[in-house]
Image (tube, rainbow, N blue to C red; front, side, top):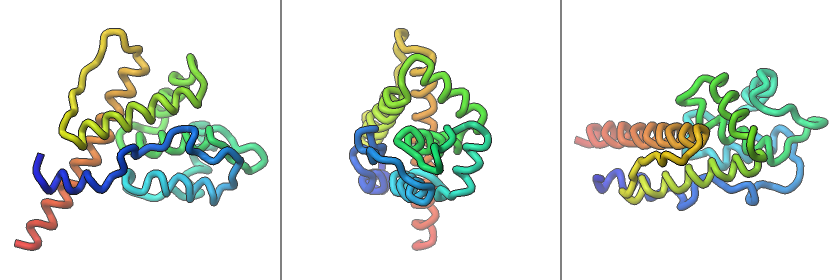
Length: 172
């Protein structure tokens, strides 16, 4: 891995995705949800979250509806997963994936597993130790999550490399 790539990746926190326990333990309004989502996603997505995006996800039943215009930790988890995955999957596929992930576990457990896989994979890639191995014991959902997480991370890194290359060519 080049020094430039290492420097670019070093700017990311050790655990880029928060765990469920780090979410606010109270309900929030739309503007707060947008702010929380954008803070967590600032280095990982091309565009910032907006109210209209969230309203669209709710309208398309990709996200749970708010309760009396208030959003909770489940909504934060959903918006993070949707925002990360929408760069590589259509929204309908994301909806199916979320539904499959929560069939056998709570949304809290499913999200924490996703965050753990993402953080572990990102850390390995960042440290040049990425070994993408599927275990035969992994469920279909976990295998799918691993493929999706790798796709998101490698897409992010490739975008950073393109930007670094472009900036280096401007300086030459």
